[in-house]
Length: 147
Image (cartoon, rainbow, N blue to C red):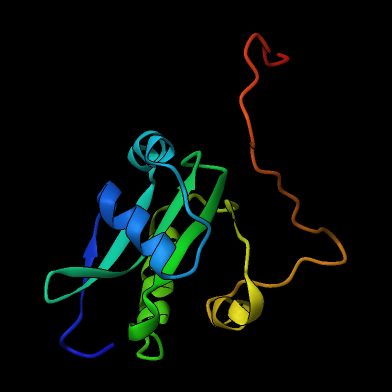
């Protein structure tokens, strides 16, 4: 990462978060979701150039047992400059310094991004386990979650 970029510890502003996700090619999120979710960030960093947010990454989790690295995004015109590596490095350094021994840290790697994450100790889990997910497509009125 060159000197014209600065890494800031802190959760991205909602507008920066939503814009970076779209411009970096990640799945768009809603303003409602960002407003609810961002305050629950465990740790985050934002990379800026000339005041503009050009990259970000967050850690979410329960603060003790499980953590997930999410929202690793760098604007396309700023890729190839080590920004992704700086973001993941800052997140992993924070987790290694603060998470309790035995804490489980996971992430979902898109495409060839697993090569970046492997540099920081992340390992593919298949075939022992595989990631699974679903996206809430609609809220159903009157449906009460099972306890």
